[in-house]
Length: 88
Length: 179
Image 1: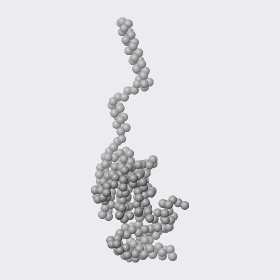
Image 2: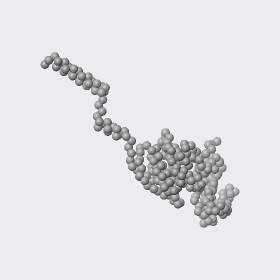
Image 3: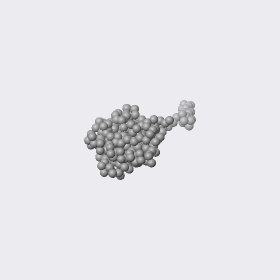
Image 4: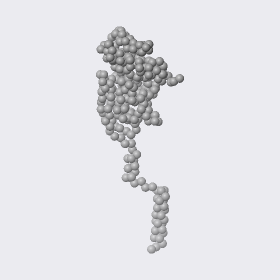
């Protein structure tokens, strides 16, 4: 049992590890030249409060309404190392 | 010497003795004007002028404006004046279109937690989380760079926790900020 707003502490280390993996891919990976990566921030982000599992959110600035599509591939690529680490 | 003179001298001596006795027993206290003035000036709150730096985020970088404010001994008065000055800078820079007024600044008994209440939400409502965070971080940076001895700030609107879809203000924010 822990306070609702402290639930993130359950998986803090895993969240940090995963965020480092994501940051590495987005900053230095093959898609890095397609975007400006502003970094990983640990904030009291309201939509994620109360989640005990590792939880991360992406905030993307879109120039056009449908330009979100071009970010799918980089995001999937950034998540891949997490799955690979879990499998191995 | 007549009896009248003896009576007069006796009366005067008696009164002088009575007066001296009253003075020595502090029934009569003299407060000389110069001493009273000195005590008053010591008790009066001392203020001074201080050059303060006000930070804000604009065009993808930190910007700083320097101004001079009256600096008090009471930290809550300093927080109030610095926050008002900071809100003024945000208005001047066009970062807030609808004026935001500071309602009150209260300090917890520990003096390290402050409760700052505004009359409306000072975050860019249609802006991204990043911009909202930098708005709050700008005030935190202003507080810490000007050596105000606070550890946490609770942000309020109309004396209730500030509400936002992205950022949570149910708990006080550390003045050191989030990274």
